[in-house]
Amino acid sequence: MTKHCLICDRIKLIQENKNPYFVRELSTGYVVLGDSQYFEGYTLFLSKHHVTELHQLAPAEKLAFLEEMSLVQEACAKAFHADKMNIELLGNGDAHVHWHLFPRHNGDTAQPGPVWWTPMDVMFGDDVIKDMPRLNRLKAALGAALDEVLKVRATDDGVKNLNQGD
Image 1 (spheres, rainbow, N blue to C red):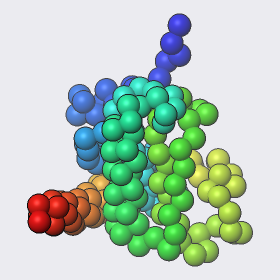
Image 2: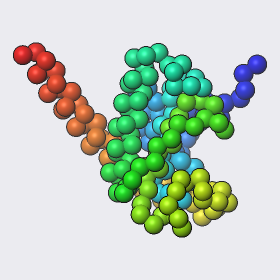
Image 3: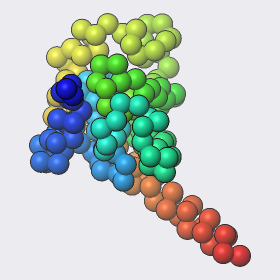
């Protein structure tokens, strides 16, 4: 018996145009903002396919998923002026391959360390959950940064293809 998957539920909401956190669909996954914006710009990249481990993706899809995650984290860093990016693939709570992308800023926590050292009642407090004007502003910023990063990638790919033809 398969355990109910909350990420699959979120993806279904994206497909029904009902997920307020949705930013962009890429070839291998969906870019969404996190429910909590305690770390402003917290983004997730959800695999389109329900697998519990990265190695369960077909090799070509796995490489494309990793590359797209890298592009999403670059856009996230640009959009939210990160001093450092924390990138994690956990899946202990929601066993569906997805990346957590946290833009970090110097002094954003009392002591340097992982975001998970922040108390959950603070990180997911009412003051950082589903503020729609803020969410729309963050989605617009991330969408614009994604446009920029994907445009550079397309240009770089075109140059590589031209050079390979020599």
